[in-house]
Length: 154
Ligand SMILES: [Zn+2]
Image 1: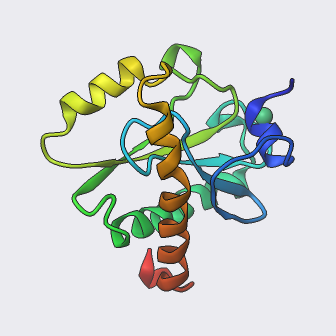
Image 2 (image 1 turned 60 degrees about the vertical axis):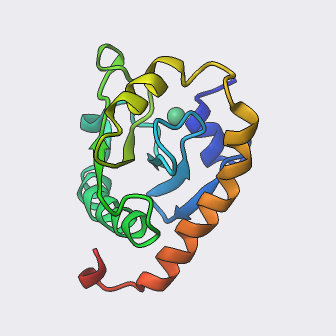
């Protein structure tokens, strides 16, 4: 099996896709730290941010702003969110293919987030989690469609 994100980009593995364009696909993290935890994944196999083409790197933050707007508009991240790139294995990067995490946050959720960080790869509550994925992806796709294309929505 090749890189899991290359397999998703190449349609050899399923994913709950929220958005895609020529440089990136946006999907739900199947091991979420919080509900509607989203990943922006580069189409090119660039292990680290420095390996990504300059054009894609320039577009990454614009796209992140747009996805963040959808997360806020759909209510998942109305209070706030974390933008996180784990750049390298020692920085907790589990898949060596560049991805930006957008993690919705609420006041007082730190203990839940830390608990999920410790247990996210265990099968605890897996069925309930999986039942929520498609609804979350649809809410985010709807929010993106409602936002329109202009930079004023970023
Ligand atoms: Zn890859």
